Length: 212
Ligand SMILES: *[C@@H]1O[C@H](CO)[C@@H](O)[C@H](O)[C@H]1NC(C)=O
Image 1: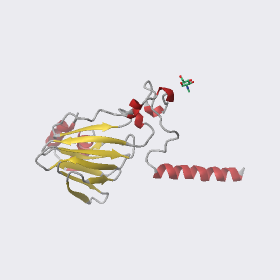
Image 2 (image 1 turned 90 degrees about the vertical axis):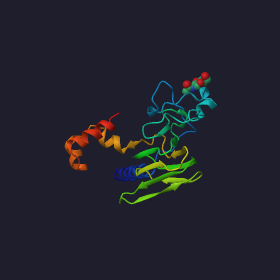
Image 3 (image 1 turned 120 degrees about the vertical axis):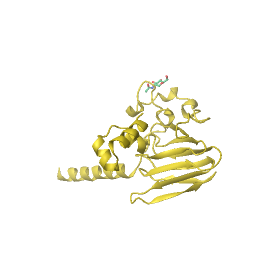
């Protein structure tokens, strides 16, 4: 009995260590195209005899998404919109920048991102947990990595449109945009006024701007 429980503890520990060091877990089968009537989270796969090549092809990023006030648009391609990615631990994004367009400081809680510059000149960078900034102007063909969970940002500093393709080691990397997470989320005024050294009027302006 004692022996069994010792083994059990070792196995449990190794499961915990593995799940802490991996990103998404390894798939247990070739693929799991989710049943369209269920959320991918339940991992109920379509009967493989009903799966076709179309489940593994995504055609939704041939052109740029709708540009926002910041002159930036992005189309995240996660398992939620591309079911063939389900359980495979990867996803990607197409992002387009008008001249001067900005991808505001943000982070992905569950994935490291590798971004490839398809077109344009993009000032890109991230900040590590000691507040050190690693940033430079990337040109067409350059690739930059943004480590998992670290704040990063981009701006088109060229004089033509720019675009990137980012890939993630998670099928659902998550996206936390700092301006809207801080000022658009309904955190109590006192916290933000004191935390950012703002008066009530300044805070109200920022709240209006970043509430969706
Ligand atoms: C999958 O579909 C095939 C062919 O229609 C059928 O024979 C098989 O029983 C199905 N498998 C499951 C698990 O439903």
